Length: 114
Ligand code: SF4
Image 1: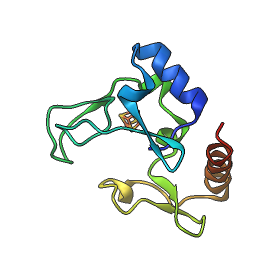
Image 2: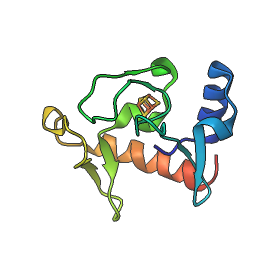
Image 3: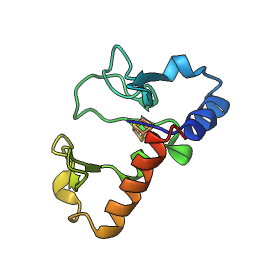
Image 4: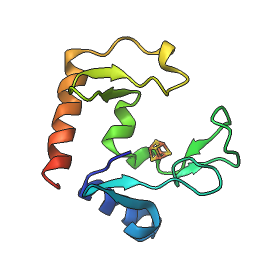
């Protein structure tokens, strides 16, 4: 999950972790790390690497914008789609123009390095 610098700062302040402990640079864009054992986001409280396993976000109230809009994502052509990898995608309505605008604005902030 890509995150903005201000989201990273907020997560660091809340968790006491350094950026290196929960992010990596994906072509210059800060991206949440996965836990080596669970293969899931470092902030997901789960003890299994099974993608259907239960888990809770430990930073839910301050989770990054991209987490709040998931499973809506942009495809290679900047069209908003439901992420095919989400096992619950059938439970969500088709994305709207507002979803597209939200994700395009987020993408622009990420590309500007904000
Ligand atoms: S919702 Fe929480 S656990 Fe899931 S990717 Fe975002 S920060 Fe990680």
